Image 1 (tube, rainbow, N blue to C red):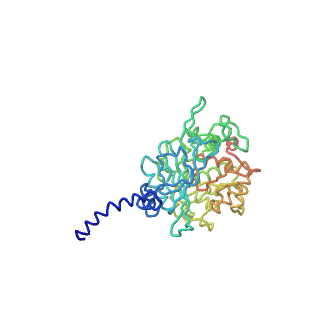
Image 2 (image 1 turned 135 degrees about the vertical axis):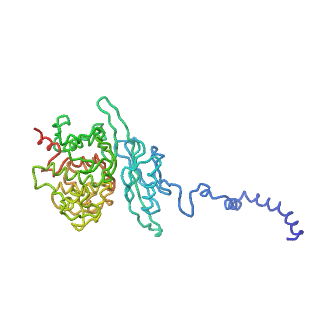
Length: 451
């Protein structure tokens, strides 16, 4: 640019600036200012390359939501479910989330998050369920399979739930309890435990003294079982069927889900598939010890292993093999299920029903569909129940107040089929075997075995 043109530009520059300032009072000026202004979303870091980074809320996050609980980046809060009984933090809450990402990514994120920062995994994480504890905070993350987004087919949408609760200590003149709400439901209208519906049960103090073979099963921490389940768990424990370790293993052996303190049941911890299989066979055979025709035959060393991850050398081979050979649990032998049993995975609610109900009905499970589950149980999440398990859930309804779901979970309109089962819930499910008209309870078995 020549010196002459540069001089003319310098003379015009003040006039141009006055024109811009003068236009700022009209719509054109405002548009110009807005166009030149920085994007507020970029200032907040809310959008990066078109994908959300900050967590969006379509529902209100509970005030007691733990700050130490990691949130998946970009996840949207969809729903908050508060159990009947109040909004106290110790009662626990379930939050439902959705994110534009794959289910595997969500699972890996929480598996990594719970490996440090003071967290302790309560069980080996699976592709769908991660349970962890930090001080008095209990958390269960359940990831649902990804679904293809209808708008952007190249992206996946994943739903997952975060359920959290606090371990609250309540002291009284008669007892001291630690209430861990991981699914057990107490009577919301009072502080009294929900009465076990069925065969009349006498107080625990009136139960016969345990025999030497069952004395080791009277754990020192059964007073920490949720009140609604305490009597059932104590009576099942007196049967001597709740071994926390397979026969022949040592404490903290890798064949068990979690480490435990000798003499303690730790009712709030999740139960493994191997533990429940062992308890299920032991409880069934103990309650029907005078009726061989109702007992489950154990697998033998001569049996060809059905599951690739449960060889003859596995300490729980006899129980797991026996359940599979009897057709009680899904297996390749029955033309269904996987060749892997996954013995150390947490047991889910739908799996517990699928294994336990056939030993109550002693007949083929009925055909079932989502509508039938909704019409009987009224479960809002009936469509999330695995089809095979739906048959057991429907059959369980026919057992009235003796149904496993009613006895263990109380009244609920959400089944949460993928939720891990606690040791207390698993033990309580074994308190009764049979139908409404014919069956046997742990209390009856204890009474009949007394001198």
